[in-house]
Image 1 (cartoon, rainbow, N blue to C red):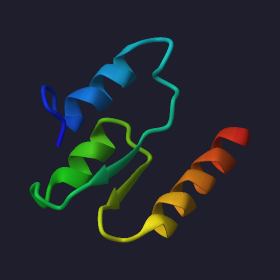
Image 2 (image 1 turned 120 degrees about the horizontal axis):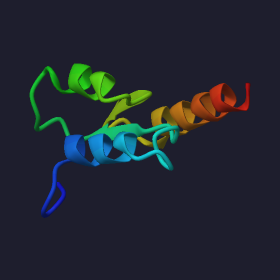
Image 3 (image 1 turned 30 degrees about the vertical axis):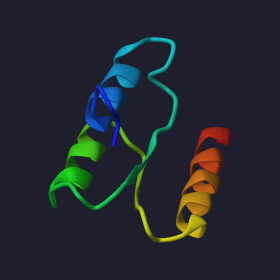
Length: 72
């Protein structure tokens, strides 16, 4: 949980700025949100959605996939 802003707002701010809009965003969520959170993330331009509690492997896999996509 972020203290003064939520993750959706952070994603929106990153994507609205010219210098940062091409940065791939991978979100990690605690599962305390709503079932629609993943779809909302996708609409904001998030490339991957990883729930907490899955260990590091899913996050590492998503980072690798994102790096491979940006290299092409």
